[in-house]
Length: 110
Length: 113
Image (cartoon, rainbow over all chains, first blue to last red; front, side, top):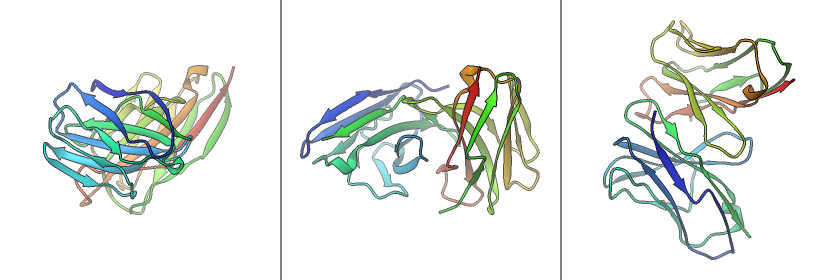
């Protein structure tokens, strides 16, 4: 099982702020993913990466951006947060077809 | 995108009862995964299935990869209060985008002590 970490766990910020959600994994997985999930609802893939310097947009359009400069690190950035960005953001990693999730970041934009 | 139909949407059961939930699709899958999510947490992998017909157990949990490769079920025996949560199925479509999982909408399980 992967050790995958997300910080912060909870974030409350004002509209217009720039934020970065951190995601790190210690298993050396080449594949990493970001999902957006509203409470009790399904998961929507917003970004993924199959290796360093490789990033792709997912199935759900998102104003966020990601980078993959190191294998273990896959941060997500919102340049100007809006209330519509309020959601839970889940990071996942995997070496094959199986994905392991972090605990998530609950973002609230006022 | 590909659709996964997960049912039931929610279940209310008494402690000690057995539970069964399933996922179906019109597409053929080559991997099925079952996750459990507690409120405010990330999904935790319960069981992974990689072959048609495969039956795998993890404690009181049993999951099967359907022979047609278009369905999977998860059974929980002798439920306990800590089984409460949302259960998601996820699959990798045969011939689809590599490593991008398709998720069901989840089954909310409530266990009354």
